[in-house]
Length: 125
Image 1 (tube, rainbow, N blue to C red):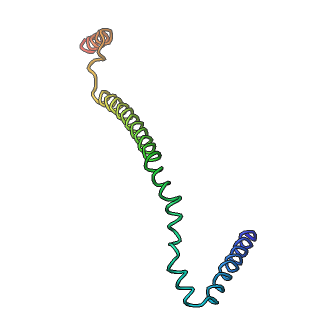
Image 2: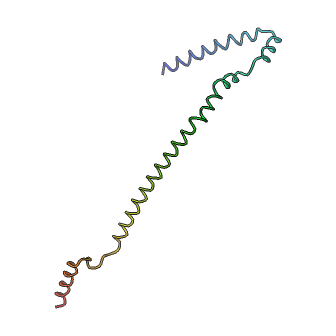
């Protein structure tokens, strides 16, 4: 924590020194000279915009954006595949549950049908 406070303090002092000297020069400058320099200077961000931001934007549009779209397409296709697998599993599970909800007749095989007939024959006697 002490390091952060120290770094912030030194940064603040450095900004005051740098900008303070320039402000002092501007204050001491005659008004005519100040207006002449102010009108002749270009905007601060124009150089940065022309040299950095415009080429970076063009690079982003030409190279990075198609890559992001391709990545998004892959992610969507993978998600659709997983959703289809999940749906298939749910369908099988639903069919399994549906099959369990209906009782089967006498067991369904000849052996159990014969056993049931034999049992029923003993009860009738």
